[in-house]
Each structure stands twice: as structure tokens, then as C-alpha cells.
Length: 258
Image (cartoon, rainbow, N blue to C red; front, side, top):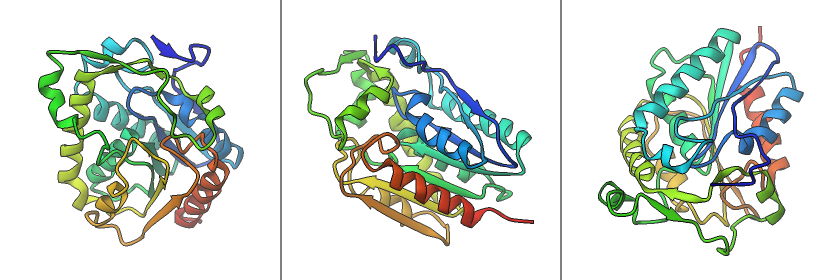
């Protein structure tokens, strides 16, 4: 039960130099949505690691069996792996991956993390039914996705780059809601430079979500970039080249050079 089963939903690692970037995919998604950015960064000499989050890349029922702590543990393990390979680290995440990046930054008490890059961070979801999922999961564990629903992608052909579940795991969504609350409590602990991208066409995340984050983190350097012709999956959409170039500039700016 997945869209585009010809894609490999597994994790990937790309070897490069002493600066590493952890790429975290979104809810019901998988690492392929981060692969174009990963290839771009590796092509510029960076080491890239993109884990597969628990409950993802298999069957939608598996996402109803995990807790949000399983996701945070997975990204902490991946970050430690990346730190063992590189001297400096950045973290980038799409949607729920952005929440997990913020969680990591909030737990990074020694301040080793060089910077955060968030793509449509899922702090405030457009579907206001999300707080109902802790109860709704007992009634409807899975909700089918409408294959005829209009896309918010500025480039509809970019959909072929996205591997995700065809059904919506309601139990998993309840854990996403709990993750939002856990991250919200930690936002004041985030001090790393932060760059947020948000698409004007995005139907998944509320347009006030990026500013909600920027108003609460303790970072001195904070930047928000609006993309006029992109939807939620910014890493594959119409303006991805603009996004990648801005990511590279951000990483270069905040990398300590000997």
C-alpha cells in the first residue's frame, strides 16, 4: 500500500567531506523525498545521512504501532552516527522531519549543531482534526487517501519522486500530535542558526507555522524564505533549485573554517 512502489524507501548515506548534513523525511514519507537535496549537497562535498524513520517505508499499519519517542530516538542515533563521521553537523527536515530537527536542536545542550534547515515544518497542521486522533485511532485506524484529490505541488510531475503510504495511519497521526507538543516545550532551548522555507501553495501546514517557531526559538540568526510557486514537498517541487542554492549558502555561512 504505497504510492510509487518503484522507488526504494530505504535510508541512504553519501560520503563526502568533514561537514555533514542529516536529512529527515516527513510523516508517511520516506528518504527519497530528500534524495535530490542529498545528491546536490554530496556533489558539493558534504557528507549526507538520511535515515528511515520507524513505522515508515513498509506498511501503513506499522506506523500505528510506533510512539513519537521511537522517531526521536532514531534521529538521535542517526545524528550520533553522522557526528562520528564528520567534524561539523547540520540538520534539515521536511514537515515532521522539521519537528524532529527542532527536537534534536533542543536537546543539543553543548551547542555542537551548526545550523537547522526546515522545509514546511509541521508545527501547526492545516487539518484541525489532528488533536482528535488519540481517540479517533480506535474507531478508524486507517483512512484511505483520495487518489483524485488535487495536488498542491507547483510541479505536478514532482509527485513521481515521492514514496508514501496510500492510507493515512490515524494512530501514527496521534503520535505526530504528541511530538508537536513535546517540540513546542523545547523551542526556547533552540539556539542554532535556523533557516525555514515555506511554500505559498502548501495545503498541509498552516501559513503561520514558520513564524510560530521563529517567535519562540532562542536563535539569534533566524530566516524565513517564502516560495511563491511551491507546495508542501519543497525538496522536489518547482523551486527546488532555489531551495538547494539557499541551503548551500546557509551551510557555507555557518561552517567553521580552519
